[in-house]
Length: 369
Ligand SMILES: Cc1cc2nc3c(=O)[nH]c(=O)nc-3n(C[C@H](O)[C@H](O)[C@H](O)COP(=O)(O)OP(=O)(O)OC[C@H]3O[C@@H](n4cnc5c(N)ncnc54)[C@H](O)[C@@H]3O)c2cc1C
Ligand code: SF4
Ligand code: SF4
Ligand code: SF4
Image (cartoon, rainbow, N blue to C red; front, side, top):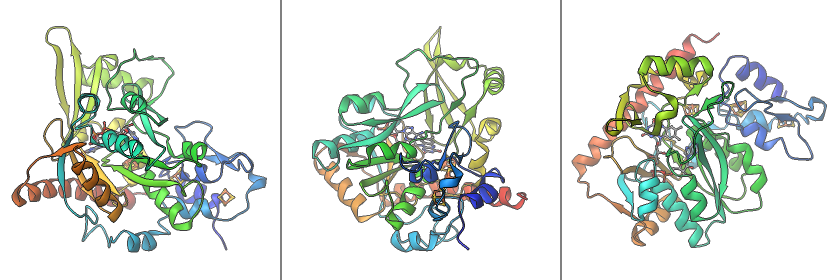
């Protein structure tokens, strides 16, 4: 019998492993159907109009927690399994920086992702991109960018607005961008996403279902975990680390999580917090995720293994390689000279984090009822 959203509730939501990627919602929440939806973006989707469910099973197929289409995707993206390829199939590795000063200054790392999107828009290869802009520390919202101005507003985690630290507000580094795709399905899009988000897009593309048809390029971010804060966690965080939430200027992620904090004396100071000190703030479903480097992206990007103000760039697909060589040739980004020893060092460090994430999932799933 065809599995449906009912089975997602049973096998994914009730086990606490829904990653809230929004894939199922984006497919099944068009104006005509509106079968399922997320009443609160911080909780798993639910039935809105159960009687309209056609029991087609697509939501079940595209969910990153059911892994039904893994074999298909692995064939397309030349991946075998995490034990033999912990960082997926990759063509090369680079460490790059935007040549545009504004993208570099406002970027999370080297400002490379937004520079590439800007280039693709200028060359009319895409109409725009679904990206994410900072609302407050640890809080982002999906947004559509079709100009350099929009992209700069969505760059990095720099705060140019005074954060509204409302007592009941929840904060999350995860962005609910996939359901947004429905609004832009007639545009040629680039999508920036975490591994769970791009997984669901690749499944939709494999099945040929909406709203994936116009996604021209998937730009994947590395992702060890995402964070979630409610009021008591904010208070605990401020007490544990002696950091005022509202003083956080920028967050970077490399071997640990790096906070740039406003400081009365020196102006700004840097604090490093290891991932394992942040377990109380991690989204629980991230424990059930084993992809660190975004193996199905066209190009993957991260801070890990690159110097400050540089982005690690891993092209994977033919399209990804082609676009990267175009942006390099056009002088949109500069890449560091890396010999094979340096490249191996980068790969080894990224592999180490990937293996740690794979192990974390194995341990978590063993204890899952
Ligand atoms: C939640 C999260 C976790 C990450 N974890 C790691 C990690 O563990 N290790 C690591 O090495 N790198 C991690 N990264 C990637 C890293 O922080 C940088 O995003 C990456 O290096 C690209 O930097 P850049 O300066 O080239 O990007 P920029 O040019 O600054 O562009 C970044 C793009 O990402 C978009 N964006 C920002 N946040 C989100 C989000 N939550 N969802 C979707 N899009 C978003 C922005 O809108 C922008 O378009 C993570 C990123 C995010 C968002
Ligand atoms: S109609 Fe299909 S995709 Fe929508 S909830 Fe039902 S089974 Fe899932
Ligand atoms: S597709 Fe995403 S949001 Fe829907 S059940 Fe699966 S993990 Fe949760
Ligand atoms: S670790 Fe990152 S990719 Fe995995 S579920 Fe969490 S947010 Fe998604």
